Length: 233
Image 1 (cartoon, rainbow, N blue to C red):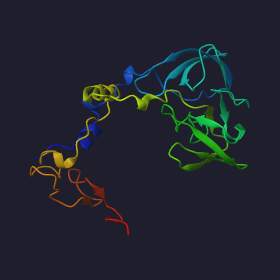
Image 2: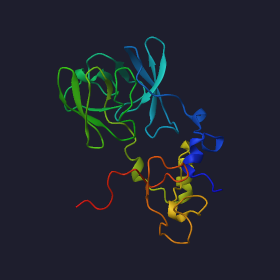
Image 3: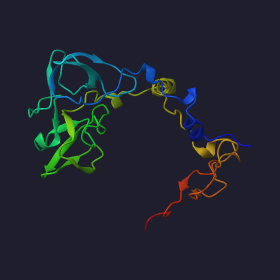
Image 4: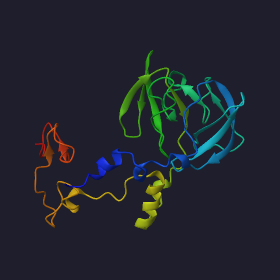
């Protein structure tokens, strides 16, 4: 009986592979109310690559939100309204074309799902009566509902990828803080009991890389029911 694949072991959700969310500072999403707030402090959270800021609103509520470039403690931000100031949260239909935004909602009221990594931004390209076209960091364009919200500005922490890790151990502990799978080992480098492609002391796969859709869990690796394979001519 072979061992479970690493993907299957992580899916069981045991303590070894559970994300340490108790270390994270909290959930980050747009508040559901409209109010003015003041930035109290900037916070580092292991669960987010971008710096966070703690904001206190005029109704007494405190919340975490992503910190854009150019803000400082004591600055005021607005939830709602029509002023496209740095860090303000507006409806997409109220944001001028060409404005750089982050933490974009996929559906109205979900708090923000897109463009949440450090140093990234999206751009408003065009608007119609019901939809807004947004250019994402992946250079893909996406049409969203006009009532979705987004925050103004470029997310802080843009130099994160420029600093090299230098050592594998540094990278390991960085990934360990968020419980990411590192290092990732290819299947042909594993033992035969750990992966269908493993064994034979070589990098030659002993079986096809295509797996049928109804393959058993220990065999469902490689290309899953591909429509086509090989070089496109």
